Length: 113
Length: 112
Image (tube, rainbow over all chains, first blue to last red; front, side, top):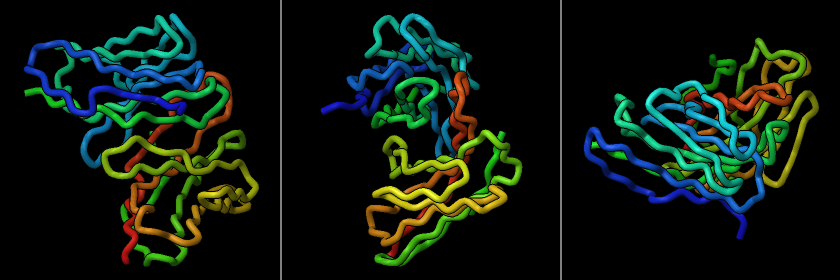
């Protein structure tokens, strides 16, 4: 089955700790994205990558970092500099920046205690 | 920036058509209208998109007005599993324009 996976589904961390969220896709998509969603709100773009070894900041990149060493993987690190990290994090992928249908993973709900 | 306006919530009886409106009065000539939906605590799911012609697929129909300032997503026979938040998004279909702006959408509740 082709798809996009995120793990874990629920994640708890203590304040001040960095945490890395996993995102993997086997759809052979070039582009990948990270969004953040707060309760009752829409999605906001954190980072996106159009190709391996390249990524761009989205609207709310402060306090986050990413890497894109492999086409299939786009991990997101929530650093201690992110002031309000508790949120639902969604990863997505698409064929390329000219193809607008984005396929989303199931999400990771991060709670910082 | 929010380029679309949607009602915050709607109800629909099971088996009836659900008509979800979206206003996009500032849409420009090269911007497409996209619809996604998000079932509670899951990732959004693509439904349909269009530029100026009406579109239909296995999930829904998209009706875009002639002046393109508004559109309606139609779920022809709503089921309980269609209960979700529906997002209407406008964006240019061109290289580099990767940001899908998801507003707060319309929460559709299908009632048995």
